[in-house]
Image (tube, rainbow, N blue to C red):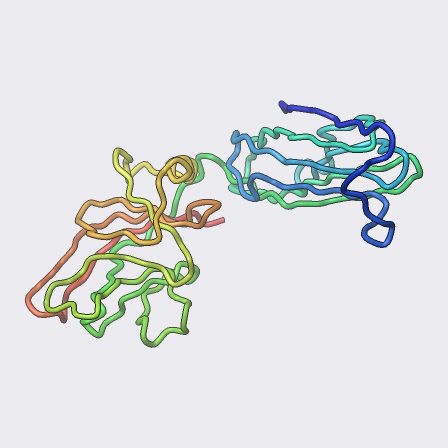
Amino acid sequence: MKRKFFVLITIGMMTSGCFSEKDASDVILLVEPSAREAVSGETIYYDVRSWTENDCLSTFSFTTFDKVNGEQTVLAEDVRASRYEDRIIYDVPEIEADSLVMEMRFSISDNTGYVQTSTHQLKVMAAEIPLSEQTGVTIYSPASGKPDGFVVASRTVVSVAAAGQGTVDIYMYQSSDPGDEMLAEWRSQTGLLFTRVTGVDYSTLTYGSMKSVYASALKNVNVPDIRTDDLIIVGTETGPLLAIKVMGVYDEYGTENDRCVLNIKYPVL
């Protein structure tokens, strides 16, 4: 566990930013995690800020708890200052299971005995966890009258028109005047993001490699001009959900059978 540490000591009475006892408890503790999901071996951090209405802060601790290792102390130290600020760098441990939920527990006290705590969950996933695959998924053009959307949680194709409003994760976009030509573009009603990647082997993809690629790639709210052999990773702002290999894009005569045929990989955790 590596860390950068600094403590701010306030001398005398604060001349600005004062607040009354009615505004907050005696000890304030604010913890902001850089991630709530991580892969084994990854480095994340927690930004910690704390202050007290009394003379000074006393002790600070950072512990973890999980069902495999129980409680472990990451950091315990004396503060002896009126304010505390720290960015704690945390190396995510290796795990034997596919995934493990950890509780990240932060606690700070002041010289009068007041204690404030903050607990955050961290879901840890094995770096080389294999991905399950769903093959032959077909999403049609909206003009076809056939299923034109996909729901990630159930991994099923749906008709956007028949689905609940704002519930379709991936759907085929159609302009107001599409004509007979299929506009091979995906969008999301649920705020998912798309990134088209190159130089990645779909056949050997693991969750760790998918997460690494997704983290460094440019993400967009849509993916236009979809073509056969495209590899598209779909996820949220915090991480990927699935990888899609486009097996075929078919723009046939008329609109009835215009479609994209896909293979999809996803972690089962």
